[in-house]
Length: 225
Image 1 (cartoon, rainbow, N blue to C red):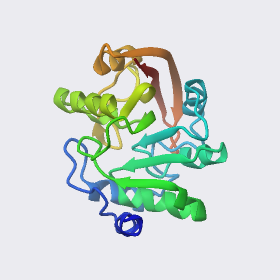
Image 2: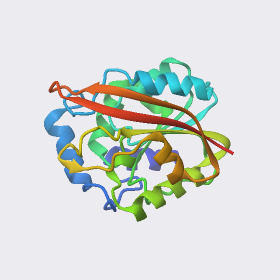
Image 3: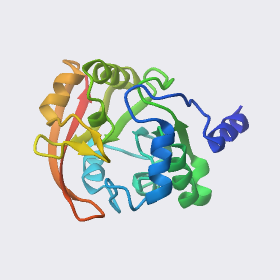
């Protein structure tokens, strides 16, 4: 079964389908092929804010973490460097995940990669201790899609688990990679997640894109009751 899973991942067909609210898989694959991992507007050499908040959440080697929209991000590298042994990276772009696997080399075998739209991915109930998302939620501009996203978070996390969600802040750009976004502050994300989550910490960051543009990001670390 594992061998079959790996073959599907390498072919980009594991849990793949036409996304609901995001651009098509082919569109995102094209972005990564044309710009590479370090050329996309959201690239950072290291996700420093995320790493700090994940440490506050208590991440350890046995923590089951899913990086939603992780793409070719180096977060997985930094988590493996810190001893994490149960990391899942989910992204709508097979090309982004291919780049990540290639960069990781032999270490890629210890990471679970899923090509899927988060709104329809077949994630198991209570499968994760931490849900990390830097800039997927902000692409969900329709209320129904945002509500579905929140339901996915609630279902995927164990009681006592944490969700770390970031995206463009209220004073951030109106678009990302040419696509409209919904700018949200941490308290707005908290309202979306519902009464079953407590906001543990809010953070803001001014991100500098590879082209030199400034983008304001907001992050919230939430704990599921």
